[in-house]
Amino acid sequence: MLSPRPSTLDRAAFIDAYGGIYEHSPWVAAAVFDAGLGAGDDEAGALAGRMAQVVDAADDEAKLALLRAHPELAGRLAVSGELTADSTAEQASAGLDRCTPEEFAEFHTLNGRYNERFGFPFIIAVRGLSRQDILSAFCSRADNDRETEFATALQQVHRIARLRLEAMEG
Image (tube, rainbow, N blue to C red; front, side):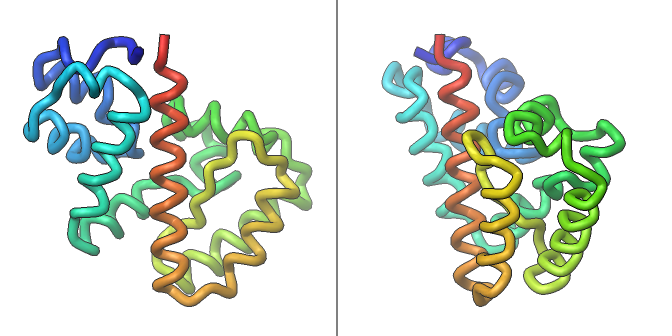
């Protein structure tokens, strides 16, 4: 059961509690609320599915804006302490806050190349992964075509959202 329980909240409280599940994209939570909430939405899996449906039904411009709302891994915002609390905790869980200077340099180079090639940051659900796992995925996905990588990035965004919701279960 999610805490706070979505079905008991008014619109403002729901968006306040769940508007950050999709990074800097409260429009996802607003659309879910506006479509109506029921008791089933008090479970992380159900709410995650509803939120993913909203994103999947959005146009490509909205999806691209959602992808661009995500921070680079071990990037400038992480170094300067400007990440959201969720992103900070997620990146720290993978040890990205403890990169060696060489690893930071590699992330910086990969972030730049990836963003230049695809027009959005590399996104991966880092929970449970090591820095090496992430760097390996970064390198292998950099060769994808844009359509494949766009779809993969959205899948990873959905995974991040689900993990964030599961962390809110009481």
